Image (cartoon, rainbow, N blue to C red):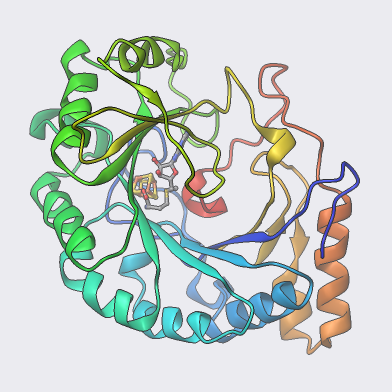
Length: 321
Ligand code: SAM
Ligand code: SF4
């Protein structure tokens, strides 16, 4: 088992399988997109798989496939099938913007994906087009329905809290949790990627709204996660809050990340990364690749210093959110 110097067990690996995306969310990318890595610098699926095999041999049990937008990389279903077949992987999930899920949900489930997180910051068409710079909201709704029907459960809806959030929009999502069996999670925007001049929106006001719902109570059970989750009587789904800024949860962080171009990172905000791609392509053996994972875990910082201004401005699409 992997433990970092602060006693945290590290058993979760996120793979950003592409830096490409079909949206241009204002907080993640500029309108023209980010400079993309040449295709030959992106890890092949076999290279990602090798990373996973090594990580699992060290005690990693949970794998998340993310990006960029993972569903736009060709062959993703087959890749999921290969991941699901790795002995020792007990949780296999994906973060997606939901476009493309209508077609992919069933094949992904059959390939062994357990569940999905779908990013959706508003359910109003004009606001969605403003935030993502694309008019694709109806595709996301179809994707959510398909994920629920395909049993990719729990379906979690990630809502990044943005400046300009309209009062009614929080209630739109409360309505979604009332009607749909999904876990809606409001997430504080972090200072990575595109940094708008406006400050971040604290989750506190959302918490107040959730706590005002009749009969609301902290959710029982569920998988350990960064979210504080609430159940409301009569609701098909739940509501949750993830506050990396106002109530940081670094003390429970169990994550490592591999970026699309094969950089291993022990913290979303780490400036130092380790070069897995070169090790893999130079034919290093598993011991050397393991050594890189061990170095990353040994260097895992105790916590981020976002309030102190120390962070990376690399976009999440490249790091793997
Ligand atoms: N394209 C996929 C998607 O949007 O779900 C996967 C990659 S995206 C980088 C992963 C998650 O990171 C999304 O939920 C997105 O909202 C979130 N994200 C991106 N930039 C962020 C930021 N600055 N603060 C908080 N969350 C962010
Ligand atoms: Fe694409 Fe996800 Fe970034 Fe939006 S948050 S631009 S969907 S990678």
